[in-house]
Length: 181
Ligand SMILES: CC(C)(COP(=O)(O)OP(=O)(O)OC[C@H]1O[C@@H](n2cnc3c(N)ncnc32)[C@H](O)[C@@H]1OP(=O)(O)O)[C@@H](O)C(=O)NCCC(=O)NCCS
Figure 1 (cartoon, protein in one colour):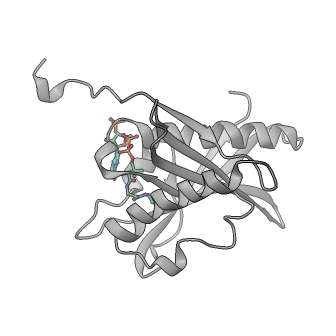
Figure 2 (tube, helix red, strand yellow; figure 1 turned 180 degrees about the horizontal axis):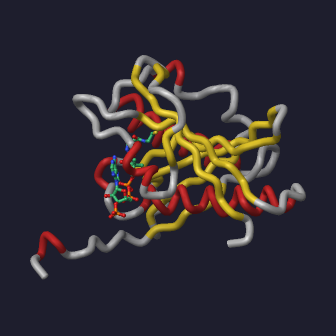
């Protein structure tokens, strides 16, 4: 196998779930999640700093990807539950991996951690059949590949037309996860 086709071996790492609101350690770990988001969404991609932290951050569930043994934060993702007239779904948001750590399957691992949590959370709430996850993916732009193709690889499908969020095109994507798996 040629060197450039060899699988990339990820650096030693862990994915932790940030303690829930009101629990010790949440503030510092949440700030680390937000700093990684700012490095990617604001510094790298040019989204406005004012919209980065929103009303969901104080209560949402957050995951932090960090290197071992340094504990350097390199990625994050967040979820919150949305109740509506016909039921509920989980909203996936704020997924980032620092540029120098991409293509190690870290993004995939963060999404799968969120999926497992959502399935457990739904079962705990008495749901028995399936759970829906919704995300608003960045669409392809002249200066960015977006993330639609990334989410498709994780089973997500496009729903509806492109729409503007924070000045850039986004695509609603949805996956239905069976609770029997
Ligand atoms: C999107 C992002 C989180 C992906 O993280 P990553 O760790 O590089 O992704 P992974 O290594 O887990 O990739 C998993 C698969 O998706 C593919 N993939 C990764 N990023 C992709 C992209 N932007 N478009 C299409 N495919 C992509 C990989 O090639 C890999 O494919 P394979 O399983 O066939 O080998 C990362 O590129 C990122 O932080 N981007 C900037 C922020 C962003 O756009 N976040 C999403 C907001 S909606």
